[in-house]
Amino acid sequence: MDYANVKKWAIFFAGILCAILIANALSDMIVAAARLTGPAGFILSFVLYAVIFFGILYIIEKITGIIFFSFSYD
Picture 1 (tube, rainbow, N blue to C red):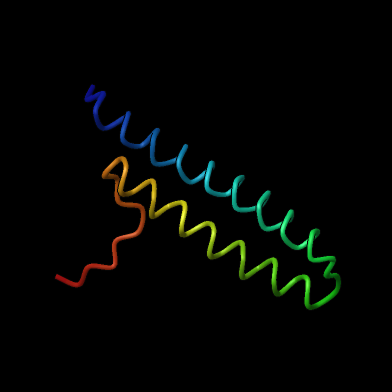
Picture 2: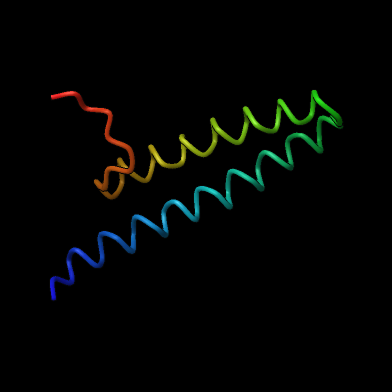
């Protein structure tokens, strides 16, 4: 069995899980600090979550070299 491939997939899934948990916690804290509720809070939370999630994935990509989402058209 190729353990390098297993390690790559483990880091891939761990990175996605970490990004989800961190993005959720940070977006919830920011929305709570802003004291927004209702539709405004929902929209802000959604946008912050997306920005933080993809930002964390980008950082993990640069550190580990594992590509999460490839949009290359070559």
